[in-house]
Image 1 (cartoon, helix red, strand yellow):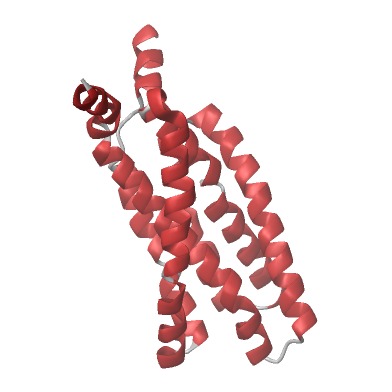
Image 2 (image 1 turned 135 degrees about the vertical axis):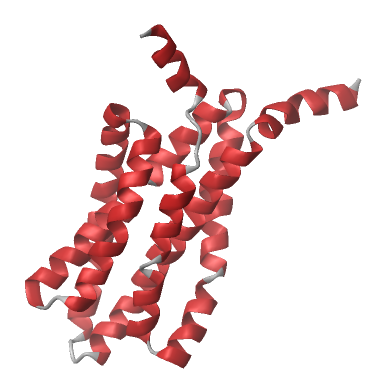
Length: 203
């Protein structure tokens, strides 16, 4: 009896294990890049001759832009679709972050903030996507995507430090800026959620 209940409780996850794995990969990749940028931006800026005040202010504005991105991403995903939003935002992160390293002055700063908007725009989208995939266990899938995914990204930060010691902070962050393109590939492989399929069927 207990075994049957356990099998029934696991069934929703097993049916959606592939798309949940893709979502999990997107979260880990994007949050790893975001956390690396947040952690190493002050060091990068001070090494370039800027003050600690400029470094701290840049990180604060980077985080604020990300918060705005989360709101914008949720709104646009309701209009365009979850999958479409993940694809577009993932594709825009790398050009904006790379623009920060290739441009100068205010243009570089704006490119950095736009990259933060794009990379954080997926934060609410992936949670909503996971909940639509497994509507029977919304709380569980939310905790897996948010808590476990973010935790794994944080655990990877020492790797960024090791790479920065070997290749330099700027080179390392440039390389990490390409990772969201891999997330874009994962997003392209995502299926439509049952809710979207039902809405398309009604049309």
